Image 1 (tube, rainbow, N blue to C red):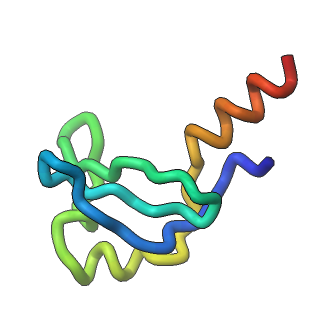
Image 2 (image 1 turned 120 degrees about the vertical axis):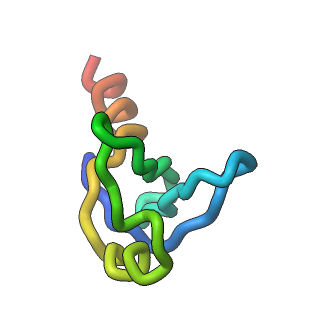
Length: 70
């Protein structure tokens, strides 16, 4: 199982935060919370659209892979 995946879509959670839908089937929050997390692109529709197909680290796949290797 790869640790990287690509962004295939988005939806908003109950609090209005953007969540990326990943090609592996998992989802991951994409928050813009400077200065800790700077993802300015998540604030606009065109910014989110530009990131479709972008590779990202899937933390859930990474955790599953780490658990399987134990």
